Image (tube, rainbow, N blue to C red; front, side, top):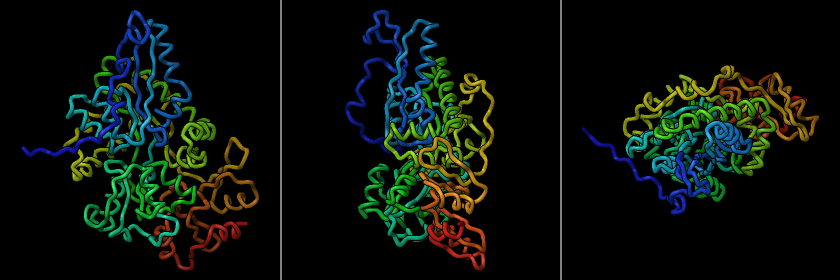
Length: 450
């Protein structure tokens, strides 16, 4: 039998490795409760990975989990407390979970598989119990370049410096996209393994030629005028998602508490779907991200669809991710079926299933408004935008359906029709296949629509 080398986890600050004042999921008289009936639940989340907000940032701000636990405490006489721990990526959450210091965590599909592998290896098995946000085509990950970069297609990355976070969903998108373009991701580019914020700085400074990252970094950089899209992950047409993982021991010992978390997550999901603008404003206030960027991903027609259900197509996609991580020597074999546990969600949430995601529509957010308007075509959107005080205008890519900022999109005039594309390469493919079609500036598209 051959063995698979699994790299060491990144070193964490000493403070994060120290035991908490109260044991995760356990009791502690030292917490000021003389009878010892205080339970602290530790939740790891990524505040700026905004398609996890229903299990993290938004959930925390709404206080739904604490409400559910307070109701439980009135019944069983226990004091429940929640310790929220915020991280930039999923790797440190996994490190803390396998050390028994985090009970529940949320992360992307590739980190989830590493979570499963590390948990089994270190005898702290974990289970995937819910989804937060997903995109069935893969549009949550994007490769971007600097605004003035001459690069216009993925094929031009050969020999270039590309920043990404190895082991992340964005890295998985980069690897797959390069392979489809006939580029060896290990030999034909100079991959820089960096945290998202470091990679963003490297792109701005010119020490990286491109950046492959997950939500919300590509949209944030584009909105700020610090990047332009080079490759839309939706071109892979492979689902990507973020989900909720729990330590198996905690799930068994505190099944009711896990149920409370999943009920609270469903409530937060209801809130986001019913009040998308308010939810975006709330997340923006906590994270410091522009609300317009949050809405790009989490809005009514956003790139992410929020639904806790462990959809079969998402689990099938997770299985397809395993070979990518194995090739990178980040995991060995992962038994996805054993890792996925739909029972807690079915037990905890009795609400009707959400309808399936529909195709995105052009959408306009006017200044001072708490609701948005949708339109039947990009041309109608542009006409309305020309005569209004616009906060943000969003338009779906004509090929992939990925929503993007209208003023950052690549516009094509084809007869009387106006079409938007996230990347220059996709616009070029359309123009090459349609006689008379031509790329135009955003301002020209607005004029033609008016």
